[in-house]
Amino acid sequence: MPDISKKGLAMPQSPIRKLVPFAEAAKERGIQIHQLNIGQPDIKTPAVALDAVKNIDMDVLAYSHSAGFQSYREKLAAYYNKHDIHVNEDEIIISTGGSEALLFAMGSVTDPGDEIIIPEPFYANYNGFATASGVTVVPVISNLETGFALPPISDFEKLISDKTKAIVICNPGNPTGYLYSEEEIKQLADLVKKHDLFLIADEVYREFAYDGHIHHSVMKQRDIDAHTIMIDSVSKRFSMCGARIGCIVSRNKELMSTAMKFAQARLSPPTFAQIASEAALETPQSYFDDVIDEYVSRRNTLVEGLKDIPGVKVATPKGAFYCIVELPVTNADAFAQWLLESFDYNGKTIMVAPAAGFYSTKGVGLNQVRIAYVLEDSLLKEAVEILKVALSKYNS
Image 1 (spheres, helix red, strand yellow):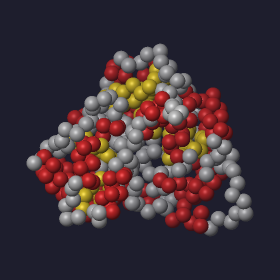
Image 2 (image 1 turned 120 degrees about the horizontal axis):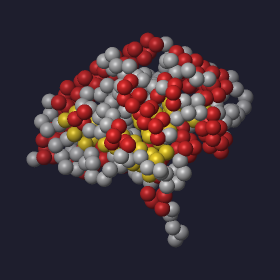
Image 3 (image 1 turned 180 degrees about the vertical axis):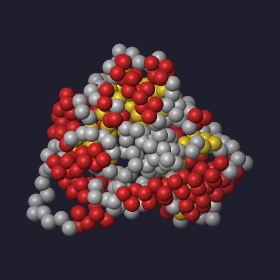
Image 4 (image 1 turned 90 degrees about the vertical axis):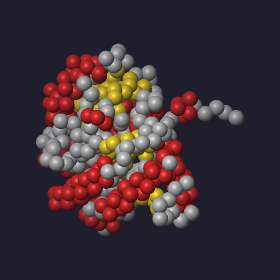
């Protein structure tokens, strides 16, 4: 039998999705599952986006420009300008989800054998994108005790070598919910300028900043225009995960012309999804105000409930809708599988994402899970109660 590629064999499983077969089996047994494992909001997609697709008058479903519709890029540039991120449509390439934008970025700035530095824990698929690109992730550890704040810059500098090409951040963070301060962004800006590196910032949760905190985009650091690459997506902002529309944004013309070659190779982003995404930009601010209020309430319900469970530790997120939770177990993978295979509380259980897959350092995060607070308050209260009972039973 022919051999599978080493790269294919090295591709990591998704810690978010690998438990799906156990969840499906539990559902077949009649168990109701509260899904806290995946960032799929239950918030309604803006009607203006759905109506744009429903009401389309089209005779031919054609390719778009490889960079995406010009009309969409122009409106997207106007959206960024409202957020004090001054770009034009030529500095934006529409991608098939933020995932493709990240692949374009890695493909444009790294060669096989190069390294990228990422504060961990980080979005698990960064490991997969790096593997697909032949790139090594060099982690710099942040921790729960500091709320997963930016590690000291000296920790980054110790890891920089002639193979280092970029630093990657997610702000606000998935899976931590941490929101970088303006000072932390400036520290990173100084670092990439000093060592002539790229700074790739995944900013798909920009709108979700809580408690009066403000999101500080790397694109506002104008002294590093040649170094900055922003990744964005409609998935979470407009609760449009299935649209698979994102973008890569940079003022570095050489970088963007290189990314365009990757965009041309995949022809074009999906047409209907671009139509919906362009229309979504007409969503009123009141929609976001209501969504943020809802997520703050959900966060508070979850965090307060978790802190009442003996042995559980959690930091209060400042943004996004995730948190890393430390459990009184030695193996969160085994516990998460047990929740689906062998446990229920009044016919119900929960599904969480084991956090070890959000690290690249072996042996770290083994007693942690990521929880996405994408369920309404009443269900989160129920989920916390299920977790409390489960931990008591599991540890007995």
